[in-house]
Image (cartoon, rainbow, N blue to C red):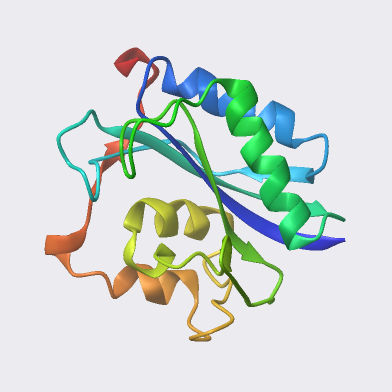
Length: 165
């Protein structure tokens, strides 16, 4: 089994429920799941949209990187993701952040995730799971990467409160 780290986000409808449903479905192929707390973050890329609820999880899988990608995209569809446009609002988004210490560079799959080093809303939940997990390319820990993000580029707005839904 390989240790994987996935990032989950949602900013449409009942985001916490969408994330919980995705985690429930992921458990079919990702075992021993540990989930970070939920956080609220401002949208990145296309910013004229609601804030996101984000988390990350760590688990074990026997799926190959490509099989895992297919699996998480199927879960996004099952949970109800509607593709509107790139970086647009979404019911659920599941990204493969790390797959053991493997580096993958294919047209449809990049591991580690191409922009995770710049995203505090990914790195903070990763740090909650393991601040010492290393980026296989830079060899920096999640904590080091998080600390390196300039304040002006941070998008975390705080902890998620259930009454925000």
